[in-house]
Length: 152
Image 1 (cartoon, rainbow, N blue to C red):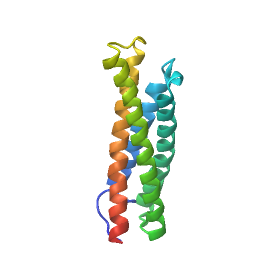
Image 2 (tube, one colour):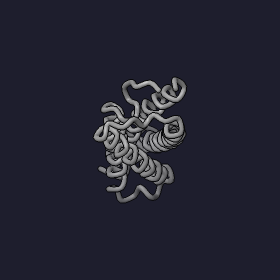
Image 3 (spheres, rainbow, N blue to C red):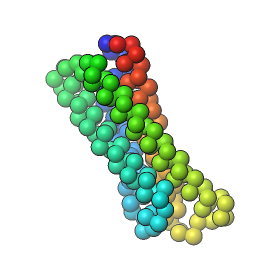
C-alpha cells in the first residue's frame, strides 16, 4: 500500500486524529456545560455522536502513535478496511448531528429573533462550530482511508 500524508502511522495521520478528538471533545464540553441542552433532541444526539467520535479518534490516535514509535506499518488491507468503515460511519453521524444542531441553533437565533437562554446560546453555537470542524477533519481522514484502500 502507498504511504502518503494522512495515512495511519504517519505524523499527519496522528495530527488529523488528535484534531478530530479535540474538536469533538470541545463540542461535548461546550454543550454539556449548558443547563438546557437535554431539552433538545438534536443537542443530545450531538453529544452522543461526538462521544463516539472521541472514542474512535482517540483509539486510532493511540494506534498511530504506537506505529510511529515502533516504526510499524499498519497498512494491511483488513485494518484499512476497518478504518474506512469506521471513518465513514463516524463522518456520517457527525455531519448529521452537526447539521441538526445547527438547524436548532439557527431556529432560535434567526427565526425566533433572539435566543431566550442567554449565554447558553453562544455555547450552543460554539459546540455546533466545533462539531463541524470535527466533521471536516474526519471527512479528510475518511477520504484518505478510502484512497488508501483503493490504491492498495
